[in-house]
Length: 466
Image (cartoon, rainbow, N blue to C red; front, top):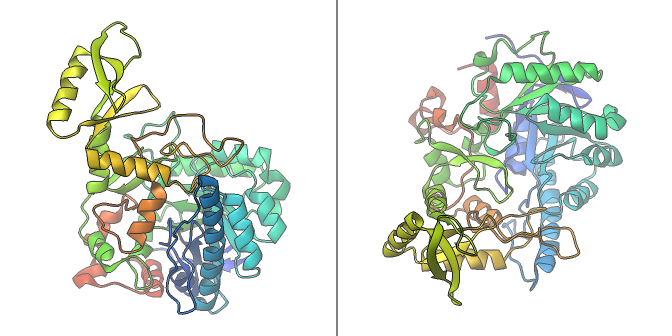
């Protein structure tokens, strides 16, 4: 394997190994600081991060507000306190010498307020902000204001060009790097466009080359590109290392740091990672963000798949083939189905899926009474964790603070499930984000006999090969 040399990124020399930020309370100050202490760039998630009481115990995020807007204010306050707490822990664990990044999602509720609050409360501790899940035009302004570098996450050169022309060209001196996240292989939310087929993965090399060519047109030939998604052994990326066509390249590891001693996920989750098989991670579009996302295909996702399959289109009046009358709900609201779908509905009801729920697309889905009650409660309990949520119809902008559409029961409350799984909740009944290479834990000899390395040991392993 080629030797891995330090590159210049964010104003200093670092190993080209970046920890990927992972969701709610999964990439925290402990894992981030430990990774950074190994010479790479550590990343903690500033998405509703954990904060601690005086005894060091995690403060669970319980909401007391009676309205969504009140709960949203609580969520922002939790996010700021948690982000500051994680930045401080990362700084301490890295010995004050490591490179520490904070990761946010542009589409998270109160994103700008949270990251500004974190950067203000942890001045001098955070070196960079990574940000994806949307088009974060204002990211560069925030970075310049606080004197930190910014790292937008994109999945195409075209997306970066749009960001550059509209905003980033004014703050080029604070652009630390550009994260290319492979939309078919990365875990969590994925940046597939409407023109790309989720079932047909594309080779990342020509896509990254186009990104580099676009960056060179803007005079950014020496700004690193960070390859994210599908990275496991660096010897599989030999053609990328020291390649003058691509320019400076770093590699981001999101899934592998899950299985380290510092990783805060439960022991049960870590053991589950060792049992995954190829194909166990599903690219799907159930997320309330509207984005595709990749997660372990467990009972949680299987229920969503089945829920969406128990779906029929309806009309308000008899039209065309929709001539079979159907009444549902407490008010026995009448709609019209096709004859074939009316027969399907009878089958759903006979199997116990007796509750019909309307979607924004003039369809009905069918769930059990218990699931219906759970969905309605989750929608009512919404705390505005996204800028706009299709599950609850929340939107963080006034005057009505809704997105103008019906709440969509085909999705789920993402804050509830990510908080639960991150704090020892049932693995089969919660969303478990993971990259598509997670199955390799089981075949990588590094993890033989259940070995779980420290983050520093993992960095050393990556540098030396298999």
